[in-house]
Length: 505
Ligand SMILES: Cc1cc2nc3c(=O)[nH]c(=O)nc-3n(C[C@H](O)[C@H](O)[C@H](O)COP(=O)(O)OP(=O)(O)OC[C@H]3O[C@@H](n4cnc5c(N)ncnc54)[C@H](O)[C@@H]3O)c2cc1C
Image (cartoon, rainbow, N blue to C red; front, side, top):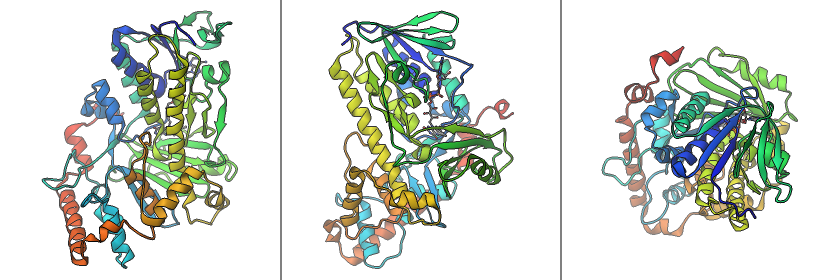
């Protein structure tokens, strides 16, 4: 392939993906590489993407960003998980939290002891033993590695933040490390006639921006990876049929919740993301099952406070690029593929793929083996996330609308079917290295959606009934005492990371 060493990177696009790439590459490669980012104010960014998962803390760590400063500057809040309402059945709810449930005992996952309890007729909920669930519903939060001197792990958390403020922060960070920003509308992409590599992008005023490696962060359109290089888009709409979202912020109302809400509607679902200065809302839906007008009406009628602007419509097709890296172009963010924001995975995918690019960085020139390895790893992570998202739909028991009837009965990937069957039998969950979601996530969503296994790990039977009852009671008490001692989420933010008063306006 291209034997030319890479000394100049051109990033096309200045949305969240473009600026994360710029920040991470400028931090890690420093003066070894010249980075230029091209974006156009005329096109703008999608401007949504406000909920994250705990992996974002790793990115902050690599960038050396102080967490309190980060939260204050992005009007952020803490997130312990996502509450799913009306997903399993109308009226039901559960929290997919970021933490372990309970305490493992004798090398056996806690949930096997809980399953033994339930299978013997016990009525305690799995979430009675979840520190995260109890803290979330008490509206409490603090940073906590462990619960006192007990074996219970502390709180795993992520953030909600204002997407516009986040992009601004990353831009300042990148420019301070030498990234050059060029404002301009890209009119065409120039390919080398022999190699088919991207040679340059030409702006509408005739300027050319050339480089050795191009990172396509141009959004859904995939200006380089799709339009210029022809990497096809694999459509996953049969599995994940939602394809539109209305998004609108509103005034905050009520206490500051430390979790995202996902409320299932007739043809999709609605998010609520609490920030310090407002609440982010969106209705994600399938336009084959509800009209755009009916979807926006439903959203606007269910806001907690006054709308702070007009609703914005976003259109998307769930799926992925066949080749995420083709020739000398690596796609990131929406240009590389998109899955609905149900589990807040898009920003994570940007960051994990920048990590992969750094690990496989082609400083000696682009080699087929590196490109193939990158594409294999990214494809695998995309597919496992896809399966995890489908799980939420496939396990519904709802039969009240055509949309829910479709997703409940649609064919699902074999990889997902196998996982569900293994869990259904003995409550076992296995996970591969590249799987984003841990056992605890699969557990909570499967049980939360109503899939309770028929059996449990035989080793959970090694303690007697009295010991089991005492163990479960202790775990519950430890979680309860820990939550009592926590400050409220709002107080914790006010004391450690409030947004500057001037930003409130
Ligand atoms: C409804 C919805 C909700 C979401 N919620 C979440 C969430 O909660 N959590 C999460 O992690 N992710 C979420 N996402 C995904 C998240 O918003 C995106 O992954 C993230 O914003 C990255 O977008 P991007 O940078 O790839 O693209 P964009 O924001 O679209 O940026 C594209 C950039 O390319 C530039 N560009 C394009 N064409 C040209 C051209 N011809 N010339 C010059 N410049 C050009 C534009 O100017 C812009 O700077 C959500 C997405 C949607 C659609």
